[in-house]
Amino acid sequence: MKKWSWKWAALWAGLAICLGACGQPGGEKSSGEQQSVQTEDTGRNDSGAEAEDPEEVKSDQPEGTRADLPGGDTPGLAAFYEDNFPIGVALPGFVFENMDNYEEVILNNFNSITCENEMKPDFLLDREGSQKKLDETNLQAAVHFDACMPAIEFALKHDMKIRFHTLVWHSQTPEWFFTEDYTEDGKLVDREVMLARMENYIADVLGYFQENYPGLIYAVDVVNEAFDPGNGDENGVRMKDNLWYETVGEDYYYQAFVFARKYASEDMRLFYNDYGCTDKAALILERLAQAKEEGLIDGIGMQSHLSTGDRIQYKFMLAVKQFCDAGYEVQSTELDIGVTENSEAAFMTQARKYRSFFKNMKSLQEEGYPITGITVWGLNDDLSWRTGEYGLLFDKDMNPKKAYQGALMDPSVPDVE
Image (cartoon, rainbow, N blue to C red; front, top):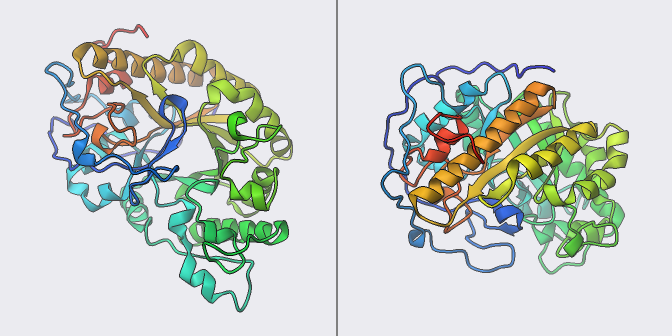
């Protein structure tokens, strides 16, 4: 199996620091492999409910739960797993605006970044520009990349790669994109028009990065969360609140991979990304079989929104093996392990779960399973979408938690899940 070829500088420095962080919630997704969306900029979840006030989210940890960061010659996460896979982190725009508080931790632990929101369709699609094009065509919406430019510039400056998240998703894609006149209350277009818009959108976005930043994007979440038996049709394809399904039809996810393969550069790996993969692996494999057979897809992104009650070694890793055995590479794309109790015992349990996760992913990779990345979904507990939980590796003040030592498989964290 090929080893990851990236070489990263400045990852071995000690991190004995305490950096101030102003809490701002951000991002996606699915707590304990449930589904929920909270966007950084709107402060709304995908049901329209108001998100919690970030000032009400407290993450003061009791004494004994914070871990000392490694010093001397002890590597950070990226260097520790350099021979196995890249270690990524999802970052909201807020972090790039306040980078002095976070930069040292990021550079010493991560070699890949994901934009928590700023590469999603509602940030890239340009409504005003699209409406100006209507006289010429209604088949190609306009795009712009202002929101994600800070992430691009940071990655280029520090020789980091980016996971692109996400091209086609039922959520955080504006309704106007699906209407004849690009208005919220316009008439929905038909299948042929929406397929053309999908193709042109994918071509424009992937083409932009190929032309301007070749080699920057190493993985693309082409389709996100398309399968959900509870909200789907007879084949498990999501119907609820899904304008892609309503305009294109039940094969919209397949068509997205057709276009992505057509326009992606050879160094862009194409992924299907989803939550709850441990419970719907068979459904995902069945639905993606045609795309896989035709060489349109490379990997499965397992979001990995877990909790301390989840059986990582025996359940999560079984799903990893299922996907790998079916010929896919696998990445953990949105890792967090939630814990609600603010106690030393709870944080040690969380640390053991993190140790189990990283240990088992590393072991499977070394056995030859094509595991090609782990991305943590958020930088600290106050910047997590899982408000009221303490699911990440650093506390609100950027102090490392025992979970961080667990991820490094430090002897201070028992090797017992």
